[in-house]
Length: 403
Image (cartoon, rainbow, N blue to C red; front, side, top):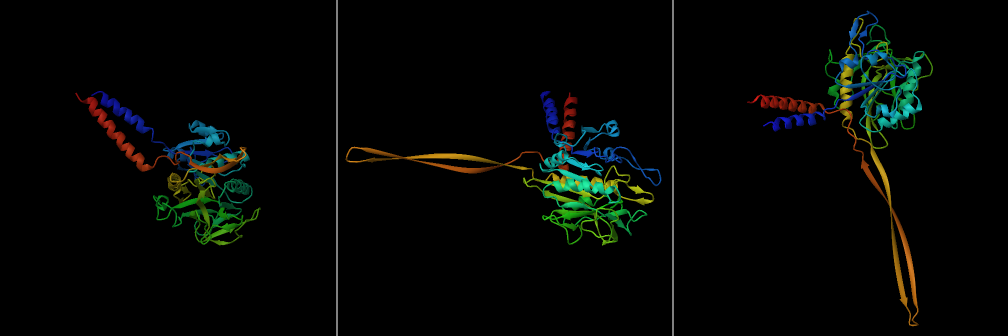
């Protein structure tokens, strides 16, 4: 009977290896800041703590960071490297990039593109308004976005305001979680809010646009939404465009009014056949003095924590269903045919003619890369495994106690 408990214990150990958490990396190597990552958030208007950090709150993810941060090191967050490289990213499922106050190098951009092109990845790129030096953040973000093949989303060189939905000033936009109807699994993004519609603070945000295949910029508004792009957070219908600082906005006009996009997702189809998820936001979930993560600003209440939680869960769910990269190899085969013709004449002389024909054919072999899908193990599988583990542990206990 002792062999049975040992067998069950081995079964538990082998089964548990299939439960893997989603790996999320945050970049702090370009002066993005660490506000809201591990330390509690203090409301600048009251001095009160209004939220715990993202990493301790969403502790079921495997978190890592790129860059230098004594705060994150002290919190025992995994250090993935001092700069963005492919080796730092190769085991990462989700990469979140805050406001890029320093631009990415070409090597860093190439590393991100290579990683993203493997398929099943999630990349979140944050922007800012165009006021003073913040325009550099927009430029640096767009430099990365334009380097990824097939990506349409951009951050226009303007600032979004809202004269109706705000936290005391029109530039402190209270964005509505108003998910496009065509968005897959939109229910994941819409749940758990204080009201029927979630509200998220975008503190002095930029505004999203998109670029077509010819490089022409378009507003990301109703009637102008390209395939594969889904709006998730918008202003109210009283949104206003401000453009007081250079460079000039590419598609919006100063004092233009309407409903503008603050955060959107794009299902990116890459040239190698892979698919990944891109999130672009006009404000950052961390690092910014007032990040998206906040739940309160003065007397105004928001759903920042629930929204970021929903967004990460939704993005990893969608990414887990996406195609990995496809590798195409070409094999050339050659065949040689020799024909010998013999002619015999009555004069007893023999003439031999040899004809050689060479044929070449190229055969394309398409091999799908057997990479594991990102986004971790689906929740229903984790649930089944947990039930099995508990049942197995109970059975082992009973067998050990049995006289």
